[in-house]
Image 1 (tube, rainbow, N blue to C red):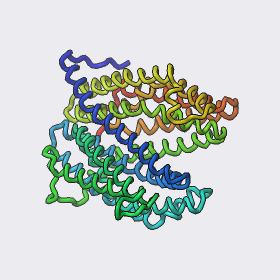
Image 2 (tube, one colour):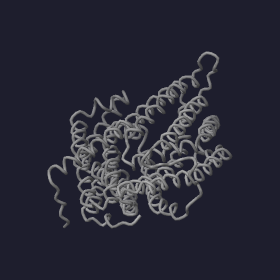
Image 3 (cartoon, rainbow, N blue to C red):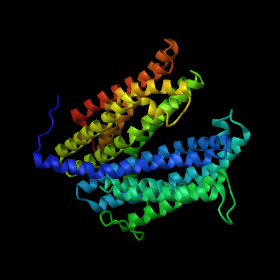
Image 4 (tube, helix red, strand yellow):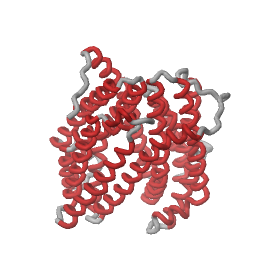
Length: 454
């Protein structure tokens, strides 16, 4: 069994401060994303059920493409962090340039695909949906897709900045983008002055305008960054060696995210077969539980950055301690939230529903997942640490076993075969989280990730 590295008290204090300084802007950024999602849903929801369904279907399509973007961003973060830690700013800047080049071609290809075949793709994926919903959804997809290249720049540049140890700038950019999104939605959905009400198309216009502004602002920020030193006058010729390094980390991360998407879809199919009340309670409980994701994601970001930078600086002991400190802080915060979920679940689920049946069932589910909050904290933060080390293949394997075999297999057994219904499905979710939490904790402590070459 691996022994935790020993550091002086002052060194631990410094690392703890670094974790907190990196984590809190990321937590705020995730909160902003959550809040703007709620506001968007409320604005579109006022247009009626068909409009809400149309935007929901469109977002399912974009979620698939964003999985690809997030995977490439993972490779960029890990490599930039490694070179910044090694005091190699020129190489970090070259990673940033190649990430933009790679992303331009990938996002451009996705953009063309969506512009040309949005209606056909939606009709294939959601063939049981009403024609009017599919038509509105296709219009939404085409409008938002027109901003896809700049939206990729927004995503990947924020990831690059985090790798360089700057989480405050992505937070500020996200805050501005979300504000523009809300204002744009209000103007274009409902109409203001000479601007007519565009309805669902207006929601797409507001989103596209916000993403264009965010992409341009992120690009300007990157060009002004002294550490990375990226300039428009630099060579933007593709470097296949660097692109392959990004892909070696990003492709397993993308497969992992793809497996998660497929697993979530299959898990949702199991839950939806349990009836309307069960499915509604499932959605309500998920919304309530999502409150705990924000601190977990923040500490995961800190873990990714510090593990990568310390490995680049050839301080694997500091890398391990940084990940461990981030894990313990996340455990403290998310376990506290788990206690709240367990003690007072009903007031939380009432925020999302007033149906007595739904509230009672969702409250039971929230109590089940409350118990697994410590495992979720361990998984989120240490997965972030392994991503920072470039050990994304290990994460991919754990997700494959945990999500597809443990969660789905147990969900079908408990919910369908043994007839425990939604409670059985949520027990399966909890078991999966404990399994993955245990596996990634063991992987992190074993330390093979310290020797990963990226």
